[in-house]
Image (cartoon, rainbow, N blue to C red; front, side):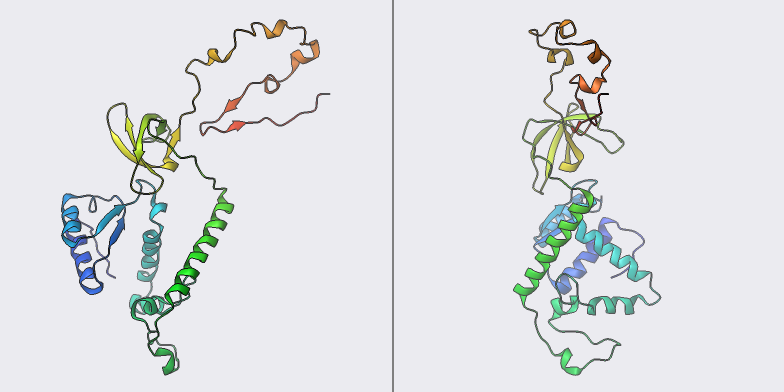
Length: 267
């Protein structure tokens, strides 16, 4: 782990090549959409070292949570008075999800630290892979359950090719740019959207608002078989002063949620 003042493509490739030389080349590398990762030079580097390069959804760092959490941990370590000692403590501390320390998962043994311990505790012993994976999967399910319950998360309906949507571009704060869904991308819940100007964008499902299939002309909702409901004999003088919420008017928010007014006493 090192602190660099700049992150150009050349420096990133140099650091990754040194890491690959020590630990081997991964099958897949996940990153954000920074210019150092989307450059032609980095694409050539991925083909040369034969690994799949996957980028997260634009403007959705949550989809690359492992890397974001690792950056947060690294920043906390670098802020310590002795970063190397803090790094040693981190590598020797068992993880709450897997039950094993990073050193055990990488080298198959516990590392000796400044804390006193028995020499037998430092003997090589590989963790049970199935036990580790089961514990990690259970912890992730538990974390997802509490996160969804705390934030009221609900599953958004999937989109199909040809659906009309609204999205926000980089310089926009509202759902103002119309587009059409071309299809799914390689990453989960990611779609390719083309605008009327011909631009093609990749967006997470959370950043795409499906346009409701409502008629273009709101007046078309009135059926010709019901010409004058006000003159109907069912309307009484007392009902003429009712609130508009009781006349059947439906109010829909930008997200498509129907607003239901609270019931009131008719005294």
